[in-house]
Length: 220
Image (cartoon, rainbow, N blue to C red; front, side, top):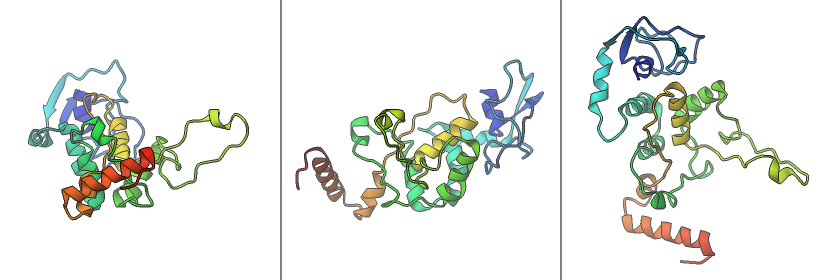
């Protein structure tokens, strides 16, 4: 946990963890306290042991959040400055508790209906591609490769386009592998409710009709 806090700049460790190669700029996340690129919590060797941990002024930020993992909450704050309104709604909804039975019916729309915003296209997609964590197909910028032949069905799992919540979680998990008590889920509830002008009845009716058509080709 000390290494995780050091990675985010919340504590200073003496001696510092061994530095590794340069990493892409994380816009305030994953940088050492002096602002230079350094190793993340997952890079330090098992033999490393700090002797002293000193809190930095940023540690107070973790005390401002309730109901959400504070490390992830501050991580989102550092990311959402360039996000559009739809991206902010997706990011905030992803950390809210949602019953699985309800979340199942609240899928985030595809790129044709909800195009990626500036946070995804100018930061997340580039960073995740540089790390080799995603493919162009997963980002929806390349068509899936069609395979022919009798074994084509068994060769690979279908490729699903990642949501904004998926991308944010992948970045966080890469930089902070020691955080295990975090739960996120990609849903689209408040965004669709706003599309109906805040009319909750229309929102529920539209979802009920959509689910009926999907399950039994019925009509509303």
